Length: 253
Image (cartoon, rainbow, N blue to C red):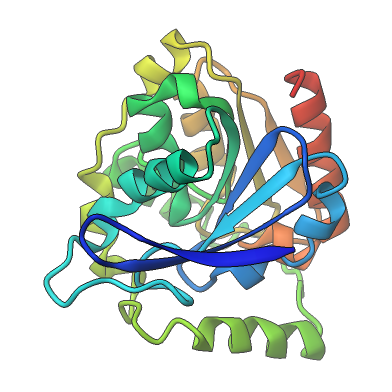
């Protein structure tokens, strides 16, 4: 495992970790997470992949200037990091908030994206109204699961507490994310292999939302992780890792 910071052209310090060797595999955290959220994925994939795990600006150990662009810079920050690490192409796993980062990079730089994995996220591929309708339609039908035991719940809360510079609520940055350059047709036309995965009890991405996103990506495959809610990678890591590896192998990556 190695870790470092990069200083962007705007003078902002951004943190990342990397481990392993092989084809590049980027893990991007959600709103309540940071690089530590992927502690159950990096060891599982580092034998076969070069795992790159950044903190997006404002989260974890990455900063943003007081008048900085915030979430608007997420896609450019990622590509800048890949450039600095001499990574030409990478498979990108974007969870929740970071789905927007992943799809924007796939839209603007499709040749840099070997595979696109959207974890518990619409990734800006359906309208906010469509997403909200799907969420409302699922109310009362979401399975009742208890994905975290006391130890993992404590760990999850501790990871979130490291985000001291982050906005207080996701709704504060959602409008900025929805303004990113995201085009499903461009992703499909470029032939980027795409895949959706979510927990069976994810209120943010119920089945109707997953199906709507899949349709925009010309029928991208969907996996549903039993016993998981919004963060399948954290809550049911073995199942998540198995499904992710299966997709990457099917994509010949």
